[in-house]
Image (cartoon, rainbow, N blue to C red):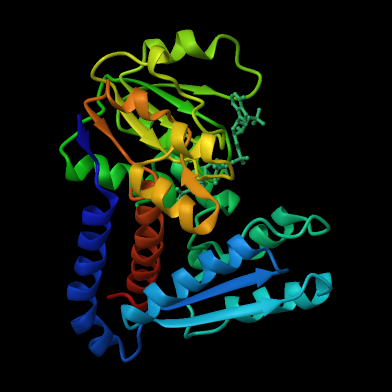
Length: 302
Ligand code: NAP
């Protein structure tokens, strides 16, 4: 088994952006601009937003975070996005999800100018992804494909199973794999007999959010296992069952640890796998920077 190493590949993606962007920024007279809109006080969202801001700044991008508390009105939020849509400094706009419950998420995602939609969740862009008519994709599935390319994994003709059907991961992932000539099955909470479907898979992408959901006896020898899940476990027992030794160490200090959806014993049977942490999550942030850069190139005609 070989690790698809998110640390190495994401560093490469960021390095490429840095190398490519310096001359182009000089020519364009301004850096790529990313705006993140965050509403409410979800601690995980706040951590993700800070990390995106740090990465953008490190690349020399213009970075704005527009924060509101959850009492912000619909009109105010609408106006924030409308202003960003016409702000020349901004190439990519992202609404950090989830929004607090009272907000109609699609209303705001639909409002983002599709040309500035850096997460690619606007219906126009999701449609283009399905049709194979774009080269900018949602960050998580895009990061997975980038990792597979880096390790020369060609999915043509493979039996791929995507666990989860969200518009953030599962659906675009399935479209991207189909467009790359894989045969794709999508599973969700109503799917019957998931273990049997998984047992025939050459490649599994799991985006469900349940620790240890994919067990060793469900996967075949030599399969490729991509773990998208990010799950927090709060007991020592769970940390010892599901987490890497580094995460178990962290549990001792913090009282919690992070793991994915795939049981570590399943990785033992794989040809390639992505660890959690250290796999898909790092790629997601790197691809956000890549998408911002690509939108900048398109908008400046560079
Ligand atoms: P989501 O919108 O909650 O979707 C979860 C999907 O899992 C749904 O399609 C759901 O089915 C399915 N599901 C839930 N329980 C199931 C079960 N017992 N059997 C089969 N399917 C089941 O989640 P998401 O946004 O796609 O995220 C999924 C996971 O990936 C989470 O852990 C999230 O934190 C993580 N994530 C990681 C990254 C990263 O960068 N690494 C990025 C995004 C998300 P239904 O549709 O039938 O409800």
